[in-house]
Image (tube, rainbow, N blue to C red; front, side, top):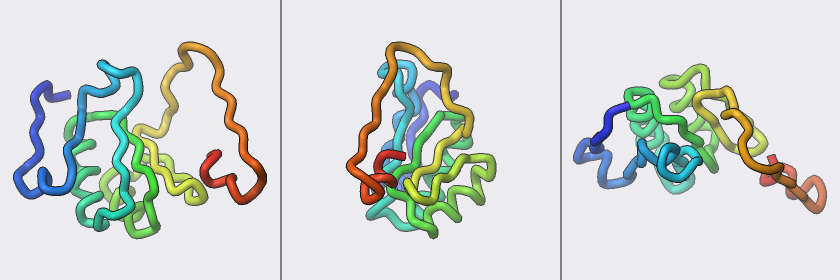
Length: 112
């Protein structure tokens, strides 16, 4: 991972990736895809791949997912939840358990 990575000027207009978040905060970077173009999200995926930063891509529609998977073909994609995880392997468990509760099938995508 590059310690002082900075986005290119064009990418800085729509996203600022925190490649050091997992070390500092204990959870990976997340890219909120809704409101971004597929090209912007694909550019973010290229930066993620270059840096090796574990990243979640959330609220990813089909066009976002297509671009991300072109760059990160091994990413895990949950179509219902609209989330992609890279790398696809979950991190080692640490701390206590987490309980996810939903009120029925309407909430299933969010619960996933």
